[in-house]
Image (cartoon, rainbow, N blue to C red; front, side, top):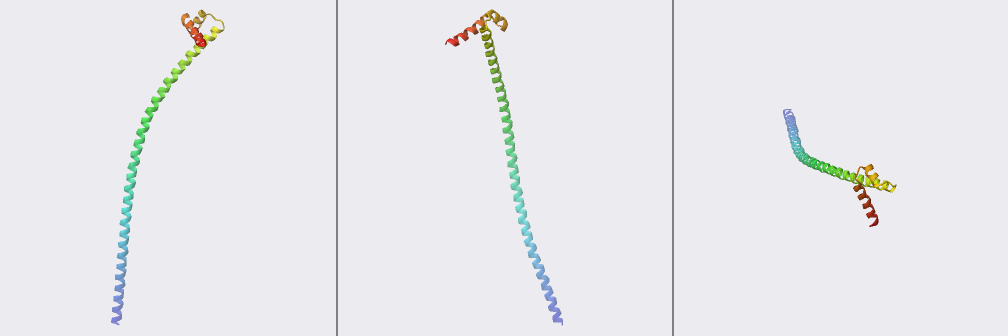
Length: 137
């Protein structure tokens, strides 16, 4: 009976040692998996951080380009304004000349035209002579 009891005890001890050994192997595998997972996560975080820094640098570059383009756009708007004001003045002069032409064609005298348009008599004659020269030549 002592032999059976001793055999049972040894078998129980062997089962406990086997279970503990199995637990240690499993725990070691979990530790290996955990450390590999942490390394992968750390590498991914570093990669994401470098990507974020890269994106921030690109954003700063785009912002500076936008500010530069804004300056160019403001300059262009000023230039367009100058050109448009010159064209408006040029069109205004042409329409004033046309008004002189029309008034003269209706039979008004040079003196009357000078008074009506607030110009000198010589200027009115010059405007009319230039028109005549353009038609002839």
